[in-house]
Length: 263
Ligand SMILES: [Fe+2]
Image (cartoon, rainbow, N blue to C red):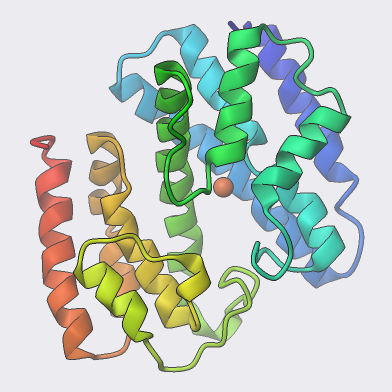
């Protein structure tokens, strides 16, 4: 259980923690700010999602705390490696857990809340959900993963629609060439999630984001994706390729269906 005061304490802790990273050149601070804004947006996205699921005010605050801390490893990752690519550096989720541990951040929480936060931070970016966690931990993890995806789709679509100011850090420093890898296409065509380690270009990474249609947990999230037209905007930024066209039809149909809550 988390009181309003407790959540306020963590918001303040977060603000102080990230402020330490806001020093350096414009590009550096810009990319740190990108994750600060992302964190705040994920926290804001998880509230209506939780409400759509009818969760209590206590649980809503726990969900907000999970959102607030989920990317806490990003700041040290960028400072140390100057990239947001886990492959080119190390897992930002694992770094986040380490930071929470070494700063004793979660010590004031009860055991159940602490495990919810630990599981959320540690597994928010994994390809698959963990098997050995409690239903409650999995539930919060699913909410966080949906809210995170909603805001990543905002960040990437804004980036794709403004090619003149494209930020390579958002695309994990992948080359922006016209290629689409066969393995990425084949996974998506077979309705499998695209693996980040198979992404060789920005186009592959875009298809990975499209593949999230198979990794969204709640109708509310599909509703937001439909309302903000995120997948169409990603598709519109991809090259004219008959393979992509056939996937597009299938994916857009799925969004339509799932957002109507009939899953
Ligand atoms: Fe995130």
